[in-house]
Each structure stands twice: as structure tokens, then as C-alpha cells.
Length: 544
Image (cartoon, rainbow, N blue to C red; front, side):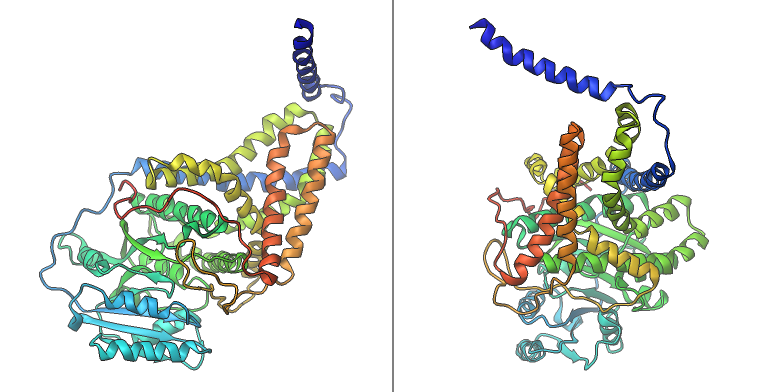
């Protein structure tokens, strides 16, 4: 009996000893010499890994700033004695499923109606045109100060529509809401006072509120999207606003001072992220921005993979376009060095996508070459770089969830493999977008489909506006298969430490690829997730 129980232990010790001998084996020490092919693989490999590590370390720096400057928060403004006139702009394009929900939400605003000027800016080319017009007429008949402005062309896309609306606007302040948002009735009563504050309010050009989500629990994809966006709104916006560096208006759920828009040069449409472009131009003019995470604005997340990828690619391309346009001005501006460096990392962060694809293609050859260089070198050199470029992502998003959900944030650990895998999976589409931006290739403003889906209810299977998959999913599936073969090679050579990391690439590329193809032909396809309620309550703002 004792002999039988001892055998598994002996086998385990033998196996561990064999693996330890393999990673410390010095057989090729002094024998292996790098040739031209090896150097041609390893030099680009380490350059890419080093750059990705730098951007990963920047995420750690944002987390540090978030906590180090935690006391730098805007004080509660005093009560407003005389409310100003406000223009509310609702830019839409083929939004027939959500336009009535948006207008109804705005109609409930608790604000003097004689001081409101609501504009529905419609560039639609389908039946949304008629739906929106009738909606506006119905609410106008009830006394709502709302007008309908339709353009027969999409010149300038969203930026063009907003600029066109400003020509007839009457407000000193301009609130903007995209079609998939549902602002609360007290939105203006809570944001406008910050502009009116006698102590510094006159220098404020824009206030941005925090997005929350109507359909977080709809699927695995929407859970992942929630975590990704919470990281942006809690840590990124929080750290930049607390430190006093530049941050951006998110295109919706915010209020601008009209004077700031005009002094910055107005809305311009030479980038796909007109919101970030205007934000940087306004801040370079000296206007201050406020981020108010305790004020929430509900929104609808993309529910299909193709729509999500189109949205992410538009943001990636737009930010790189803005970097090319704005960074030279930032570097020449009379602003502190930390503002310039943060602007650089912010606007160029999406360069990591083409680098990620490049790294993907080099991992297997690099693994083969590194096999003959000794495992100690891989542990000392490769591992720290991988940790800097990958683990920072987990810590970044976990911090955001801990701030929003202090009692249940640990459940986010279950989603982190999916978050990282999804980030890897969309890298092909985003890499194409970034390269196009660098090359100066223009493209149409690709809207994100909205289907009026809240919670777990609703379907988009029979609705219009679904994005086409194109050739991209096939490239993603090819990379998924490539990494599956890389896993086989790693296991065959007992390189077990790399297998979990490689499996993220396998899952990421195959998940995004097959979901894109599947939802093209089976629109109801989704992975449901049974989880406790994760959306924050009205008081669940970060600890600002």
C-alpha cells in the first residue's frame, strides 16, 4: 500500500526533475552561434516586444497617477441662480430603432424649456428620416422646443452635422448625445453648474460624464466591452483629469461651452475621431476640461462582433489620424513635459495593434531560435517583457472594476482571459485601420449599429444595419490555426510555460473570426453568460 502511494510522487518528482534539467540544460552553451537568419528574426522580435512593453508600462503609470492624484477632483459647485440657454444636439444616421427612445429621454429633462434648444441632426438615408421627422413633430406639438434638421448629404459625417447645427443654435452651451444614449432627467442640472462656478468655472470648456450600459449582461461580448470601456472611463479619464493632462471628449454624454468650440476652430472632419481632435485643439487654446464620473449616462453596447470590430477600427484609425495632425502642435506648445508625453502615449497607443500582429507572426520562429539559446535567457529577458506588455492590461482593468464594484470586483478575474483574448482577436482589423491612417488613406465614417436592446432581452437577427464580415475573419481564423500549431510545437518541445499565453492567441483569433462569420449568417448567435448583476448603481461612481 505504501509502495503504491509512493509511485505517483516518484513519477511527479521525476517529471519535474526532467523539466528542470531541460530549462537549465547547458548543452548548447558555447556551441550555438547566431547566424544571419537568427539575427533577422530576433532583432525585430525584441524591438516589437520592447515597444509593446513600453505601452504596457504606461498603463501601470496611469494606474499610479489615478491613485497618486486622487485628491485632485473638482469641488461641488454652488447652486445656480440664473440658468443659461443650452442647445442639445442629437446627431443621427439611420437610427430608426433608437431615435424615439433618445428624444423621449431628452423630453424628460428637468430644465426650463424656454432655455432649451433641441436639434435632431439627421443624415439618414433610409426610413429613419420619416420616423425621426414624425417623432420631432409629435414632441414639438406637446411643447418641447425641438427642431428637425435633415441633410441630403453626409459631408463631414458627424462633425459636419454638428457644425451645420451650430449655425442655427441659440445656446451658450451645447450638450451632445449619440442615438444609443439615454440621459437622465437631471443631466443638465448636474453638469451646467460646473460652468457657472464663480471659482474657475469661466475657464472650463467641456465636461464629460461617465458612460454606463443598458445591455451589459446580454452576452459574453457585451461583458467584455463593459470591462474595456470601464477601464477607459475610470482609469484613463480619471488619471488624466486628476493629473491635469489632456483628455478627450468622448463624442457624446458631455457638454461644451460654445465659445470653446469656436475658438478651437470648430468641428473638423479630417479625422474619424472629430471629438478627440476638437478636444486637443481646445485644450491647446487654454480651455480646461472636467471629468465627472459621478454623473452617469446610460448607453447601448454593440451586440454583434462585426459592429464591435467596426467601432474599434474607427476609433483606432481616428486616433492615429489625430496623432498625425495634433502631436506636432502639442510638442511645440508651451505645456509641461508630462502633458506632452501623456498626449503621445494616448494618441499613438493603437500602434500596438500592428505590432501585435507582427509579433504574432514572429512567435513561432522566435521560439525555435530561442530554443537553442537556452531557457535561462528566455526567463531573464523574454518573460519580463511579456509581463510588462500583457499583465499590465489585467491590472489596468481590474483596478477599474475594483473602483466601480468594491464588493464584487474579484469576479472580473473570470473575464480577464476573454478580455485579453478579444483584444488580441481584434488586432488584425485594428492593425489595418492604423496602417491606413499612417498611410493617409481616407475612409467613410462607419457607424455602429444600434438595435434598442436592453438587459438580456431583444434580438437583432431580423433587423437592418448589420455590418458585413468581409475577408478579415478568414485572416483571423488562419492566425488562430497558426497559433494552435505553435501550441503543438511548444508542447512537443516541453515548453509548457508558453502554452497559456499562446492559447490566448488561439482563442482570441478563433473567437473573433468564427463569431464574425457566424453572426453574418446566424445573426442570433451569441454566448450568454449567467452572472450576478454587475452594473453600478447610481452611487457607484469611482472614488473621486
